Image 1: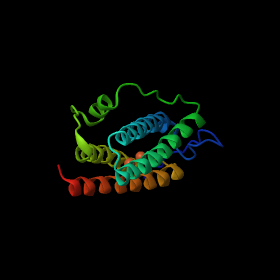
Image 2 (image 1 turned 90 degrees about the vertical axis):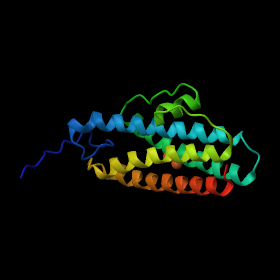
Image 3 (image 1 turned 45 degrees about the vertical axis):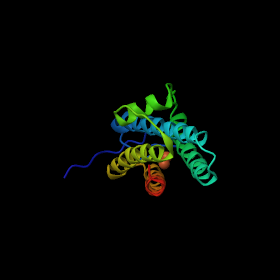
Image 4 (image 1 turned 90 degrees about the horizontal axis):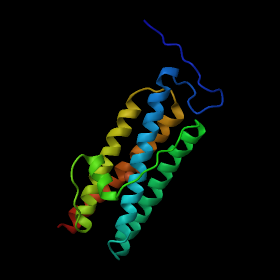
Length: 167
Ligand SMILES: [Fe+2]
Ligand SMILES: [Fe+2]
């Protein structure tokens, strides 16, 4: 059996227990998660101007809060590693298209929810994939498991809501 030697990158650092060779891959992951979360913040914020419905708006305001917390966490971890936080440019829909790999057109709350579901599923897949691979950073792993569940809650709410309002 082969045992890897675990190199501690920084004694007080955030990547305690992570192999040195994995560090840059891990930083790329943090950047990817940051980008995805920032996009979700922008996307859900954009939905707030689409309707005056109080229930719908409150749901999206809550999601903006939660996704902002997620994005801030990744930004904080990148800053702690002296890494640049990605700068996100481009319109919300171009970004959606890029993330989902297809052209995106939106009309109405039901399709907004459906695209939201697709975005959440993307995040869910990425978090699951991350959690399954043992990176060694247990704090990061358990935080991402919480985020995974947040995304699952969002996804299920939007799925249900889209069904309820139809169209
Ligand atoms: Fe999120
Ligand atoms: Fe979410």
